Length: 85
Length: 271
Image (cartoon, rainbow over all chains, first blue to last red):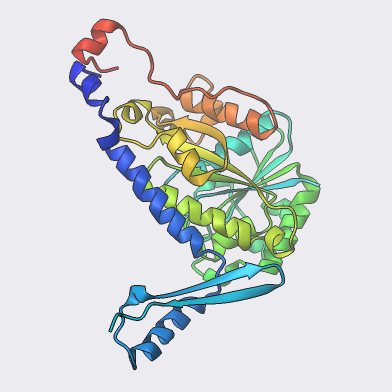
């Protein structure tokens, strides 16, 4: 390691490794939240979106579909944000 | 009853076969009857890394199809008394591995051996699925690099949901992280994820860190598992990992840059 590298290594927060870590933490958390959910959920999401769009103009992010397991039953949670009129 | 140990990763080229060969050999060195099973049907390589490629007569698929007995297909290692290899087939038939067939062979191996080390193919297709399905313990081989870490996390999800233990609500598979191709120099420069970073993201127990080492290529050139190169850093790191796998408390080595003198540092001399 040369003397320049020694000073460079002080700037840990802008290192490519810390960028990698940050990106991984986000994507891994996202993928874990989708883990274990049934395979039909993405399709259900798409179709729901299509139905709602027949009546209201909304974009993808305004409909959230989540399935929560609570012991013996599962709760399908739909969160639809309608645009302001 | 022997233990089923799967060496898996999701991503290819991270060192699964090198690790299977090293860990299996290490277990045999320590007196455990061990068999290495190559699940990479179509692209077998474990035989080459173990140096027994010219002695493969019958393979895993032959045994599944009843064309050979298990004892005919098991290749005895020439170096160690307790070590055997079951080679994968070169067939291009993707459906050659069946769950029933694999289960039958695994059960038979379990009777004869203390450890059945399953070398998984890359990916999450059938071969990889069957390699981990019957596992009691899993070694997740990971490189300190974004795609490998992400794939390892995916693999951990599958181990927790698609294995027999998961499907039968049994005790979860014991998971171990093995970080390979580690460059302490690059970690210090902030160019590579550190052990701590990867542990934090995957949150499973660290089995060992294998430094990037010239010994690995050299060993594969010769068909000798790198753990038998006891002079090398990678060989020693694998030795430590085997000790930990068997429950030993061994401090982690090779995480730091080899110390250099002050003048070397100043003038950036290459090691």
